[in-house]
Image 1 (cartoon, one colour):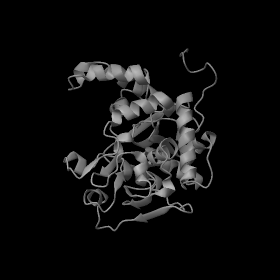
Image 2: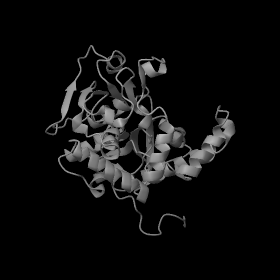
Image 3: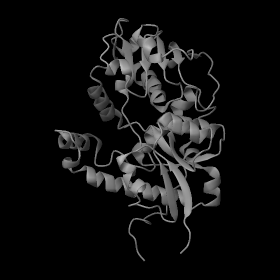
Length: 329
């Protein structure tokens, strides 16, 4: 029996990758060693900075920045993590902030400047809500995954190691905070902290109806040397991820597997608004639209020296027109 190519894959512990983790779906010709026990920012750093993994789920913004600097990574259009982000702009409730334009001229904290969630929100605040990103004084907590040159006019500084960006918000040292996760003061129901959009779900649904964008957060990175040596790997991996997603989506239709009283109703609400496959992979029309927007935001906000095209960012996973859809021996 021929030996399969052994690759290490680092991803989040998602339902849509479960079949790859348990081996019920396999990438043709590939034996995957799947790693899931690390948080996103650690995984991104270890992949982009340390080159610890052959294939890894990685922040779109950091990947785009790495391509601009030719770090030696490629990507297939597999998008395991998406999330609407309007509910992740947090405010200090004593600052009189009630609408997006109230953020102009304010001090706003960030986990890190380069995070995809934060790139999206800075871009949307600028283009959708009239809040220029250079009108803000920004404060970051973490080192950036990929170093970049600040654009002229950007007010950006890193807080001290003994400071917490979340505590600074609660204590009023900053006016607002954009964060990729729910922050502890909000979870603890600290009255000093609230959301810019209290009705964030309605805001996100209206945004989708207007734009058809369900924001992509992460893409699937591959070391360039693997692509060069084994050019068949990207396509085989792409189809394996799609198969694993199909298995997951079929299973998730059953409301018995999820301990939520109105789970099926939520599933049907999602289907009515986002369609039957909101987690679609590939450079589809909807995905292309938002990836081009993300590349534009990355250039505008100084993460790249020029606006990168999707042909530069993503490998071609086509098998030819009308090929690959029906298997024939």
